[in-house]
Image 1 (cartoon, rainbow, N blue to C red):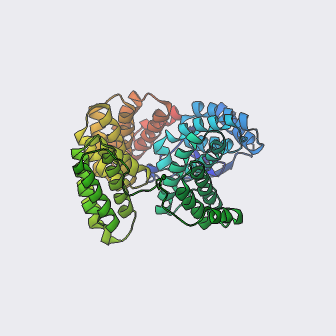
Image 2: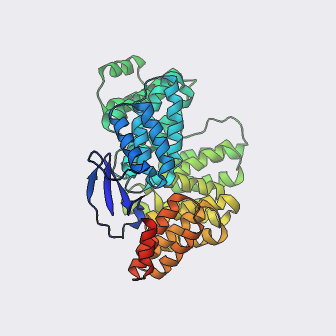
Image 3: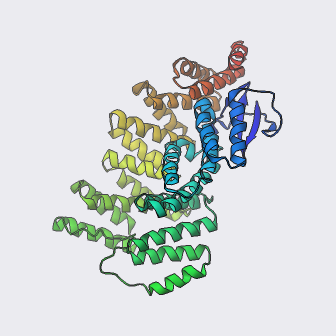
Length: 457
């Protein structure tokens, strides 16, 4: 197996085929040698030529050609998609400041964000997340000038990404970029006449990097005041005049408990709010506060927070399945995979149809990320048996095969991969299944291993 470097990353070539080894298959022993794309290559396949073309256009600043080459490569080599996405985002950073650029960045970012699993884990994920954050920041800068309505969601997504990376000790943006993010967020708040919010974001920007002109702007804004017509961006109480007196009283109790730090009491009342007033705006507000409470304790390493975490999870598990599934999705994106797997499993037990399919896949991925093999097996088998024919079921089958391989159950792994090869409907899944079928056959010293290796060649 050969490794080629493609910029600052590594992809695998398996006997003439490009093959991307899953991060979760880290138990496999792989011998690697380095090969730089700038060195002469004997292979003249369309994939290698396109890879070299992509690198050349990136280094020479031919942005339109670079993006076109990336689009072509994604269709040509599905198994290299994470690396190609990272390179495509790097190309997008070279686009000029224009309204058209904002539209193009929106499309490119949406395509990247749709690959939730690739962004979450894998050897490529740190680089992919970093390039995504840089491109998101560039899109924010462009849309701050040409499309302010589209700009603010970028602030929210980047803010969530920064909190997640801080919890996992890996910054997706450097100090200068974070300062720029908060400054642009402050400018957007200022233009929306939300002075308090603007002042807070400006102060965050100054905390990251000193800027004399911005400090002077903060001074001119004057001292913090409670403005009659503005709402702070992170209000503890929902400013909603409608609703019954009981609902309003419940919301006040939640807010009071949060102010005193009694997260469990606030969550108990939040569950009552969600149960009794499911369609209310305050129900969503209560659900968001409960989610924030769980995140705040789950991201702390001290053992003294474990009882609070457990109490919050038990309360959240009593909510309706769609809300539990949404909590699981948010927690997954924050890298809180243990909590995500638990809530995802609970939600899937209450759901049916396609909603259950997606939730099962989410719980499976979260459990796989923390090596919870018992949950992986249960979720995977349910997907394969009850949701056959879906992309989620095929992914589950691949996960089950890899799990059997990691547990050194090679005959069982062989059976799973054989079934997957026979039913796989995408090139990426089939190549991965064939590769691990070959490795499983090798482990069992089967004569078919040679035949499978020839199939890969």
